[in-house]
Image (cartoon, rainbow, N blue to C red; front, side, top):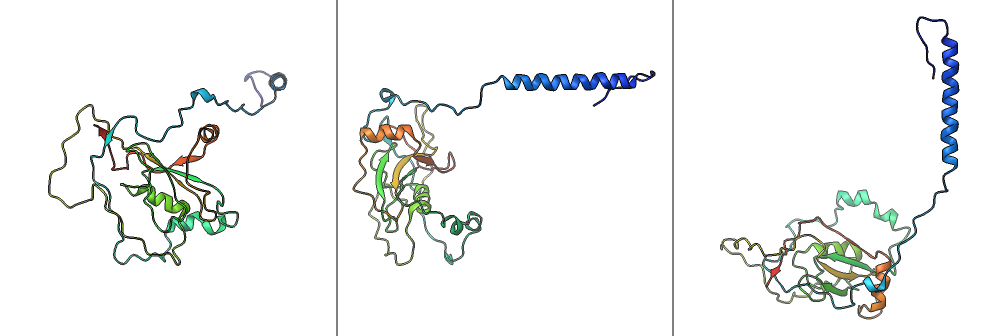
Length: 242
């Protein structure tokens, strides 16, 4: 860095003064940084047991009623499941699995619910905060797909799925016009998550049914144990106040 004043012969004097100013600025900056305290981690927040909600069964804050049809899923003719999708190549799961498969971990699927299936060998009921129940029903199919990526067993040797029990409402082709728009006081629940279902890994079965206690609630408040999956607004399952 140098400064020059044109029209004079004092260029060296200007350069000397500029250099001394630069050194002084560096020393001033270094001295100010040296006086700062050393960096440290943020102190974790404490959990106030009195602020934790009561340990009650999951359920909606107000009575809800389903007002849309459920999604029916199927397989397109000619689908070849032996061809690995491109996104699976990008994930490179075979290399990641060399370090572990998640044995001994429980994963909370906060989504649209999970429909039972023979390949969900260790599916644990959770709860439905929208319609009530244990979360073992999926009207949108999204949560079941997410759960299959987390803890479904291999297809090799899997038994044929049982005949599905009838459920209401069942998707029926119709020519009726769509229902009228809900009144202003209607509350439509579209963003995910909607329900909670526990899916442990297939390596170790869970010890008994899932029954959270007050201690579990307190422990869960101290550490994140689940993550939401899905695009907000993608769910087609809604509800409104009765």
